[in-house]
Length: 347
Image (tube, rainbow, N blue to C red; front, side):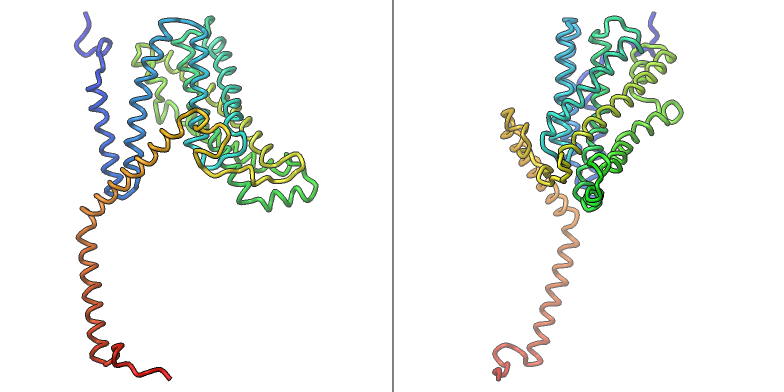
């Protein structure tokens, strides 16, 4: 007999999701009270979270039922492809030439081998393409790798623009592009790996990670969940390091060519249409552009409503004071006889 407190058979409905979504409203109110300007971004991110997870849940259910290695491979490639879009389109403020294929290669070269070897040997699963085992692992690897790649590429491109003179000085004294860019590369990789190092250092004592929490809620023993979390964290650190090295190395090879020249013309500012594999090549540029315009319009409207209702009284008092001051100044000028009609002629 199942005890009343057991949550094994509890079904979560969309009503539960809607109740949890109510916590987002606190962040939105907090944003507009303090004029942080992130209220719309929070709503957009929360909506994306709901839609994307609903689609992934439906899609993964079909993949789990088919139990096909080709379907698992397709999902793994799709996750890396969407991660590449997230890096190139949404996360990176600056881009370099051929950034999309280089980032896609970096993700595939890190997440796929590490997930296959790790699931097969570290997790002792002979059938490593088991959908319920492999897909969650490769998904977590993609999510962690995205942050490392974004940090490393952004730092390198920023340093190449802001500290170009230092790199050119090294090149002028005969250093190769590898030697001249090594300090920048080292700092970029250190920044990319710092979040993973900090996360591993606080696991268990300060925080209980989501992977371990999910395994416990799913019915696994605490000991097995803890060991599984250790294995996953080691996967994440290796995948982040490998992807960051590949993407950062290629970025340096693009910005500094074989003739040891810094090519500023190969660094682009953030735009949806200025890199070869842009959304326009996928037929989605119009939809994305319309969405960004609608989002900016909604943001401006909400800001204007907020400023009207919250800051209107102060502005009216300021206008009244400025108007009274102007009237007093004009009255003083008239009393002193310095009006335009009575002013003496020049010369």
